[in-house]
Image (tube, rainbow, N blue to C red; front, side, top):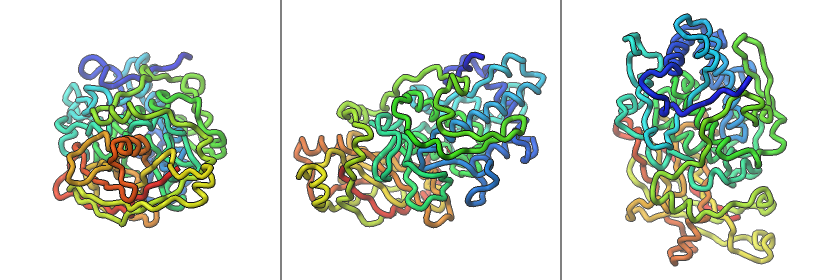
Length: 461
Ligand code: C2O
């Protein structure tokens, strides 16, 4: 068996290419199967989440977020979903046998010019022959199905440096590629829930852009584009490569049902080789390009970050802001900076200048979909937005509504921004001015629902 190719959905030629015809027909069948059938769309969505809290039967309500299991768990999830689709396709007479056998998930590369909206086959209400289109989902945000609102440039690809961050870290204040080292975490671990770098952007940002079912843990899998979105997220693991995959994360096993209903137990290290272990490959794993001039400036000044050894020097919080409320307008706040501790200096042979500076946005809560992402800028509110000072983006998928005590946090690497400010004499050692600005893309109906941010902190390492 050779590896199947996972391809960029926007690169498939023509209208309704065979791969998408097959996908639409399969989703149509899966939507009608009873929810206890593992091949049903309802079952597949419930594997990700249900409205219940905590572990279900070991196969449902399993999605892993704010965790180093986020990337491998979703890889396995797609792997079994793809097998369900093929199993269903083999039983649909109008699908040619070779199309069914070779069917692999395409990915949605919103980071590539031309990919900033849905592919039209996902937005059209009807199939090529006038039947209702199972790929259409009417819960999406206004403008998404009309292809008139594009993904904001700041959320199209991972933020600068994220592909080079350590995969995971023992302290949640250290920004990572894949998420903090946790146990099994379906929102059940104690706060804080800190998203990994890839999980934040583009992952959470794209959930926010599409909206509707895609904003809900228990409904996301019902949107057929969910699977293409996650396929692109999965692809970024291949873009990064596997040289720095974590050690010691294979202690937790995850259960999945296969297409024949059989129960499978898998671990994170069982899915690191897509060709050898899972029989698929991506057609393109080149590094993405930042979509704005400011982000390209950030890319240019990033140095390659040192790996694991860094963890031996603990990070330290040197300043924290008050809470703030985001309501759709740009909002400024200040993080007052204190001095580093004696322990900090002692660990650095008396030095007090940090090698790395991180910005944490802590304990984010919302009740209704805020409708947009916010960029967090190291700028005064009166300045005009400059992406070379964009610390990161906060998006609101990944907070579980109504669940106290599981607020979402983000950690961003701002070392290069701070260094650039120092060089031009614009760094104030006593305070960091910040502005939260709503980003374009996926505006839902006005007024925007408010977001509560617990605090923002500056961390030195
Ligand atoms: Cu578990 Cu994009 O979600």
